[in-house]
Length: 461
Ligand code: UDX
Ligand code: ADP
Image 1 (cartoon, rainbow, N blue to C red):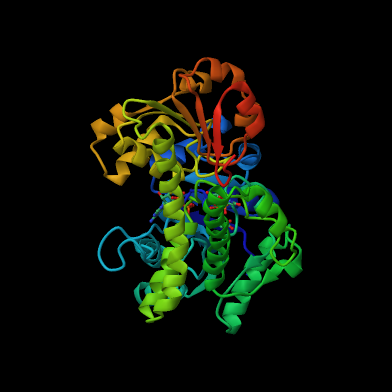
Image 2 (cartoon, rainbow, N blue to C red; image 1 turned 90 degrees about the vertical axis):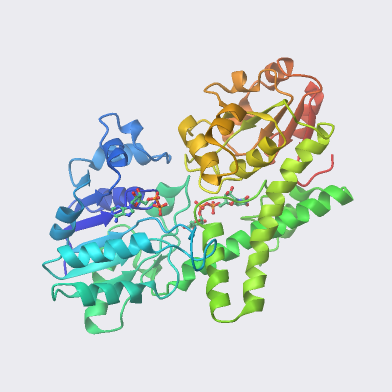
């Protein structure tokens, strides 16, 4: 089938950027991105294209170019489903917060709702592409729903997991390492796979198209997260033994079998995928009775939680065992640089710990809005909304945020933090002035020479 009309359900971090690229690279295809969230769609349609709800380098320009031409954002979900030949599902699949599998399994209720809606609305044959991070065998579940509740319309379900990393989404989508497409090995299944391949062929070389199962996405994320937890485990040992984790990472990264990427020691990984995918893997392993497999992967999460707690604990200990009523400034709240996404960000957990120790926390992040920061903390349910409001102050200017602080903690590796006037920051802080670099981005010697008491992850210097 030659595709001329695509609908994408879910205008989030995956759906938005992915569809912007398809629209740009395939001017002959009409792409409509729909979402139930009226506010989010309004932001995607904002006449000032820099106000789109997702911050990704290069994305505003892309949207500005294609929007209104062959890229549309709308809340009319049913109309878009009806008109499309191919429907991408990129709705959220958070970890379940209730019932069976609570805290581990992925919650598929949004996916299921989408499938039911597609089944109700469709009057012509459709290809349904699942994009969200999903546990294995979800394609089968979607298929069951579509085949048993539909109007006799025929569906092909394809699995096309997304590998874009936030902060580099545009680049990752423009030149992906690989495009995975899974589907039925029937004639109709192969035709559907071919239709999707043809879309990607507009910009991705054919040889990067490979067939694979749904498990590949989970496996890729689990392997990457495991590297971060492994180097973080070494960071603690480095601090005790006087070694420097950056040196260690550099040395082992030279071994091409290991490679230099994903070896940056940090305050702990965050983001919408790593923790969720690993917990999902653990859940799947347990449900098959594979307890050793489950324990093995769970340890990656346990190590990550430990790293966040350890960072916070170190701040308390260094500040003479109390941070009560002390101003601690967080530079960065996003889970990594170049995104405004905060899901599972280490900053949330570190601040939670420090609020329990009665610290006053000041936050500055170049892209995250105050409302989001309070939402993140309130979502934890550790204390009342009022208490969170009293404990945290959000600043729009980094120098104001750092003024009169007892300590500064770097939670996100934003490039701009490196270029700040650190002398000015030092002069306006309480003394002794402490800096805790949770991302290893600042120059230890330079900061020490200005008078700071400086510490970073994985170094005892
Ligand atoms: C990840 C996968 O990389 C991507 O392929 C998949 O599609 C979605 O999940 P993302 O969550 O956007 O992407 O970010 P990623 O760059 O993988 O970083 C995840 C976390 O690990 C971040 O908090 C990051 O700061 C941290 N990290 C990463 C480190 O602490 N050290 C590193 O060396 C690399
Ligand atoms: P991701 O990082 O996977 O893209 P997001 O949470 O950023 O996740 O985006 C998912 C989007 O899907 C949200 O904006 C949410 O409102 C939307 N969504 C969830 N369920 C539905 C549905 N049934 N119909 C339309 N949109 C939906």
